Image (cartoon, rainbow, N blue to C red; front, side):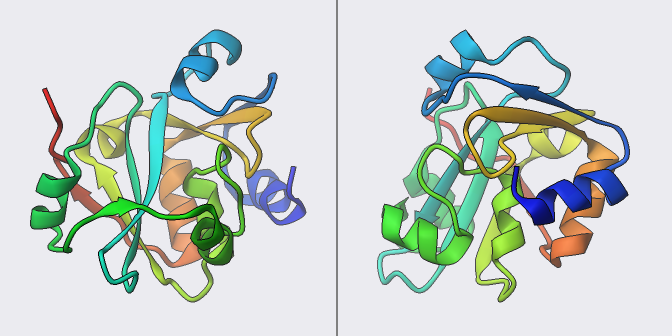
Length: 164
């Protein structure tokens, strides 16, 4: 695990659980390979606006299908689309498959806007990759709150529109 994240988890996270598993790149792979553990399994999307000026880390329950057009109207941001692997590496210091809340450690400029679905914010605990897709951490709500305070990110908490 990344040293900065390891130190933060040990010193500030409070109670958390970490499980190792085979590499997962999709929700279906996670459902097959991540052992049952506490916390809401989530889906993390790194998206950008049409000009590439605004970047968002969007976190929703794993089974929610996001309506990006409706989310763009809600934020407001024009023509949201998935950001490239190059932008992901540039802004969050990670590669596809390892996207999670913890990647905000690499966003010291606070250039990435965090958008959390209300259900994620309300969860007692959430699951997140610890900057690699071969492990999952279950972090309590209080731990998530402490982590965001540590990174300086203020989440925008909304009912993220879904596709039925």
